Length: 397
Image (cartoon, rainbow, N blue to C red; front, side):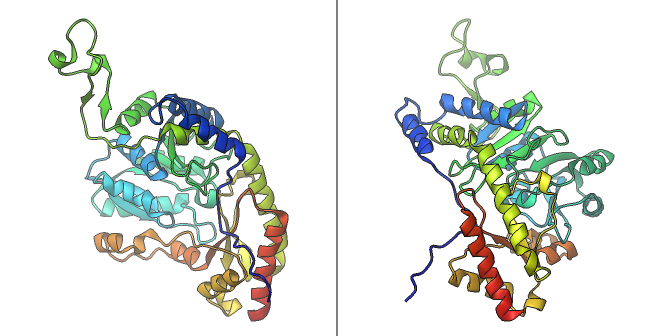
């Protein structure tokens, strides 16, 4: 009997011995959280992305939430979010009390476009909620056309916040050339891993200060901003224990131990990204004979983070459902995933906003499938995935 092959997941972390050593050193330090590694990680991340300021937090969701809070969204305002994204992109808007307006996407990329953005802005007006922010999502690592989206946003008086959780490593992403803030994830399967973790970049020092306060329960120790001088001062300097909370915040801090891991991983970002690009290039070449039944999503290879390698599956031509394809691949030890279920179909949003028809999102969702992609994959692993796909198409096309 043939031994079962090791499962190739769609994504996984790449942890090396120096990463383990960095965490071990942090565990031996005096402070496991809110220590010096936080500021070190923020400074290194800002340097890697070209950002003026970087604010660390404990997840990509927290990063997005802090961005929304920093822009002071109100319940009578709305945020445009593409329908194809992880639910967190929309959920953080509702966490502020503001409303979500879903934008359609390009059916071959899954990205919000200037045209779908304009349409969504009109839908926001009909909802009687003024659109204050839009959150373009760099799905799979492929960049939205930020300069074109910026033109639409400026015409409408809307701020742009990049959901760049899939795009760390692409030159210029995080530098906030076209956005007020950019949000990243350092979840295990992302470009670099801290297990869980997130980061927000901005050019605005006031927004950075506000997010650092909000990630720590809304507490601050700025003596010049203290309101209760009787409690704050027993002499010319503030009491050493004193702090104030002027608004509700959250415990969104990233521990020193995880920042130490992030610092170690960040040194490898360029290497990891180069390997992801190599794997994507191999997929492109090896999958070409399977088109048009299985073909890559449309993309600009020069501007891609390659968090995911997504293909479009023509189930009608293949004669198999996507679920059947995934099951057949699983039998050969190939893990795949679908990114993502259109968020407007989730019961919470359907109940709140009613059924919506977004044809681009439906077309993308119906065909997309994420194949294994992570830096530790070998060339043989890539060939194994493609051979498995070829077996499926030969048997059913």
